[in-house]
View (cartoon, rainbow, N blue to C red):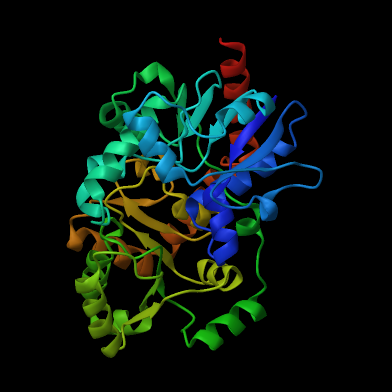
Length: 379
């Protein structure tokens, strides 16, 4: 199967040194697909080079920038520029990164992680928001089939994109093997010393944005007795995103009080050292299409406190403390349970680790390749 494989977001991340969640999905899924004998991946990027992501002996294809072609195809009957050349080289196109082309005569599989820009436009950057969401909905409807990452996301996509449920399949994400690799105690201690962190702390990791609910995390931590806050500070790891002015002010005030630390960016190894050193990941997100940070924490044998809403119960129910993300007292109570009950913390470490073992990129790749075969055969 000759598969045109969208790598635009991954290519941009590699060029700028910041591969994000979608880029990670594109890269890790590709590794799994390349191990499947009948899959021949052919990287395609819009307005970018494929040079950094092309495997040895693979010929990549660069097409014009996506936005202009998508707008043209949305208001005219014309397909994307380069459609004819692409049609000769591939049997199917997989848009892994939300950049979904209109390609008549070429089956298109689109990965849509979630429908957040449509269901919660208040969490999206303001620049051209209405135009971008309209165009994205149109592009999603061009796809012959959609793959998403949870049953919750599927329901949201069916509703927000007006796509029939039979055209949407669920293929859960995998967790990278490096999260299972244990870092020795001496190296973990070295990372904590370098960062000026104590041996025990609560941890949040993720881009700072409204749906991540970090303000309530800080408020929940503040409900703990002062001596517990000081002994178990709240460590927030993540770059500032958008609509976070109030959060940044709160972070600065809490840092001044000595009970919260904000680390804007950490290299992968140091982030994994923190995952293996913390007492719990506190991740009561308001909306997740899957919740990969939760599974990465599970693989790191870290107890997790997370939301009982959106897709998170599918991932974490039975292996984490589930809380109402809007209830500050409930989040704080869960944090106190982790501190006070070592037996509970130990049980969560083991249950989470078992759950993480079920999430593999090989399984994700196998299920994705099955969709390729169905689309190409017309089944």
